[in-house]
Amino acid sequence: MYFKKGPGVDTKESKKDSGIVVNDSAVRFEDTTDITKMTRVGGLRAVEVQYRGIREFESGETTFLQSKTRLNTPDLGTMVPETYRKVAELSEQCITLFEFEMMQVTEAIKSLQERDFYFRWISVYMPLRFLEKKGAQQRLMNMMDETGTDTNRICFELAPAILLEGNSRHSMMIEQLRNRGFHFMLTDFGGINTPLMRLAYFPVDYVMMSQEVNGYLGKGERSLSAVGSVVDFIDGMGAAAIADGVTNVEQAEQLFQAECKYGAGTLAGNYVAARYLRNKKSRDESVDE
Image (cartoon, rainbow, N blue to C red; front, top):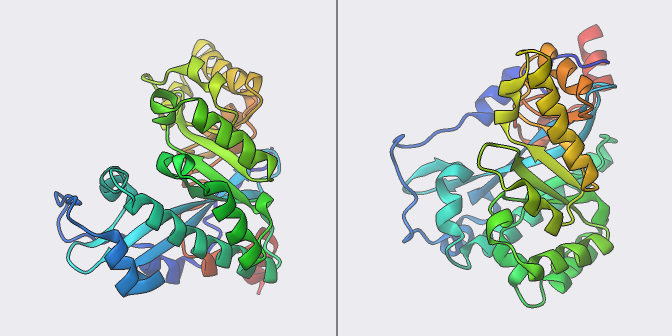
């Protein structure tokens, strides 16, 4: 197994670019904040999408890219999903945000392809409200046509809330969009409060495991067997398991031993702007110089 630590970016410049700034650690994203107005005034600058690699453990190569969106608000500073997402999803604002994110991701896909950066897909967080939206499938296909983006370059992230709140309508829409070529990934799976059996109702392609799973690594054969059982369960549901929060080579080796093929975390690289993403080959060449 080859899995070498490295951010995959020009760290001197990207540290400044990827820093998260908020006016106050206790600030809350009030439901009076209007994302629609903010994005209309600030444009794409108000929605900043960053990316991190998801690597294959065996080769150590970046295979997928996961996106994360920060909101640059005029009053509350820069906000991360943990701060704004729950409130945004109480209204149609989450759909406005999703569409802005899609615009940026399709631009990033085009830019990365022009630079011959290898990746299979980029993930975009999709709120459940969008799956319930009338004409959602056609809206996505129109966006793909307008931007010239292949559907198989997009993977929609689903929050674990779908396991409790999802229904047959959501499941049907997921299947229809998969038939169009899109991928789906469920996140934060396998924690202590995860209703495991509910995964059977939602046909996703990938499952990103909760970082809680990593807590069982390095604690003996029984604990490693428990991790392997979660991976086997995901595989049995027809999906590929992805580990999250992988911080060192020892964790990567144990996850690989548990037959988990992919991992994300500081070992694979932090979230950065698309312009800082580098292929392993080009990173090695810059080091040689």
